[in-house]
Amino acid sequence: MRWLAVDPGTVRVGLAICDREERLAIPLEIVAASAAYPAIRAIAAREGVEGIVMGLPLHMAGGEGDAAAMARRLGERIASGLGLHVEYEDERLTSDAAARLAGRGQRSDDIAAALILEQFLARRRAEARQAEGA
Image (tube, rainbow, N blue to C red; front, side, top):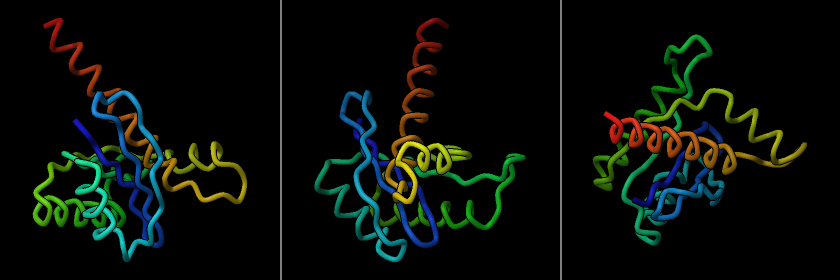
């Protein structure tokens, strides 16, 4: 299945995509938050995306705040407007990890999206292995 990951933000949104075998998460692009929905629509059509992995910015204690509510609204808009299945993935600490990977002063929103996608894909593989063993 082809997944597109979204690292939502108020200024920029990072996007990453995986291969059909769900093995590789590849940073794709960074778009302005105001242009996120049209960009996601275009990429989904062009790349044959079947599902969205929306980063869910939780508080360190695990609760949801305004940023998580914004991510859920974007996810709902994508689900209803594009008819794509949307999964939510905890994105705590991915922005910090992405910034370290990208280097000082470099934008890293697309790398954060790839980290979110990698985490999601690893969880799916683990759940599949567990189901096979059950």
